[in-house]
Image 1: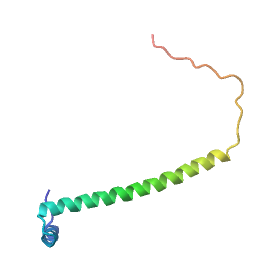
Image 2: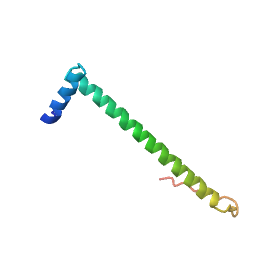
Image 3: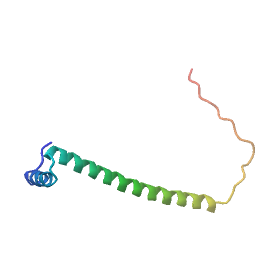
Image 4: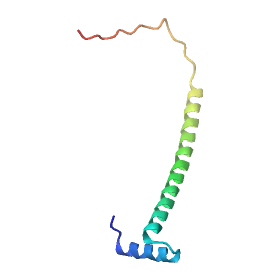
Length: 81
């Protein structure tokens, strides 16, 4: 992977501040970024699924019950010759 020069110099400065190699500093920052991304994505998906579940439940509860008419029909399976 090739980093832009400005980003590479910033990474090197951070690595020097924390007495790490540039490679190790990049690894740490990537891990932190992935963890933050996964946490924010998990929180977003949990809130979305809770909202959609509540909406689905309320829509089902709002429906009037309906009785089935007559006996259930049998399905005919198509069997190729």
